[in-house]
Image (cartoon, rainbow, N blue to C red; front, side, top):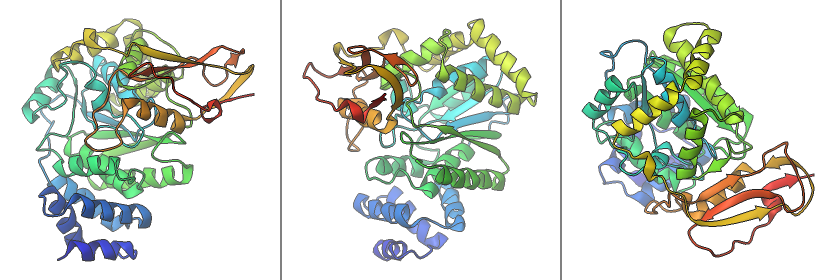
Amino acid sequence: MNIVDIINKKRVKEELTKEELEYAFNGYLNNYVKDYQMASLLMAICINGMSERETFDLVDIFIKSGDTLDLSFLPGIKVDKHSTGGIGDKITLIIGPIVASCGVVVPKMSGRGLGYTGGTIDKLESIKGFNVSLSEDEFLNALKKVGFAVTGQTSNLCPLDKVIYALRDVTGTTSSIPLIATSIMAKKIAGGADKILIDIKCGKGALITNLEEAKKLKTLMEKIGNFYNRETICEISDMNTPLGTNIGNSLEVLEAIEVLKGKTGPLTDLAIKIASEMISLSKEIPLNEAKSLVLKSLQEGLAYKKFQEFVENQGGDLNSLEISKHKEIIKSPKKGKVISINALNIGKLSCSLGAGRINKEDKIDYGVGIVLNKLVGDYVEVNDDLFTLYKKDNNKINLNLEDYYEIK
């Protein structure tokens, strides 16, 4: 079997056999298929797609590249939540502690940033000392002790996804429906959750930019979940506007803390909705009862206390969070109402500041990013603060404001 023949076969839109997929992907994991060869195959897949059978085969290959977790020793129904990624999406940092504080175990295997979307692991690494590389035993012990744990892919769990994920991030292949479905579902199934809730972000600031593609992804992931006897519920949510006000790693952790301490707004509303659905799934209770538990957790400070416990248990020091001292405030050139905020361009800007990666080897600057001072629907006057840039230095950045804010 020859990797070049496999690349060419997919390039001309032919279906690959499971043996060919195993040869290519396991070959990349074992270093006899090179970066540039796998990048070519991923691009061919991104352009030409995969059949449902190919995707199911690839999920199986990803899962079998490592171990799977057995969480049956933990009480109750374990529910994992995943987001396909969006600009400013820090929901995991909010819903995990809420749900765990209500007595539901939340095992979370997360990834780094993909494209311009920030990754949960990168955000958590902005907390000094936070261990995102738990061993299998450490992960299980954290779930038993805290009820909520987040780890990157360990060397034992879905190692194939870990290397493919990093390559997709820097080769323009992040938006492929079958590759997204494979990456997410392989991790979820290997991670041992009983039920899976997936938030599919759709819009300018997401990997999936149109509703038709989002619906395809929803159908595919639900089919994969059912095949592995995991009840899988996928919901589609808007990502044309950044989620929340803060974009950037430390900044997003700080906003998550604000929500857990009582901040209201669209981000809080979405977190309450997802947390309620997870609790309803796990406890098998009506959604309104689950929502009452969520609101009680937030109002009584239980969710924030659980967040502190979670961070401390994984070695993090919340007092270490830092944001850059170099700020530039972008002001409104005119009076009017904010009609839209371009999530994709905000994400690109944040990435250019150093909050994301362009190359696989790039190091993230955890202290840079953007804070939106005005949101969609707000009225602004001339010279009102629109957004604040947190930068590596004091060099001024020239921007075309119309690329970011539409004001009428």
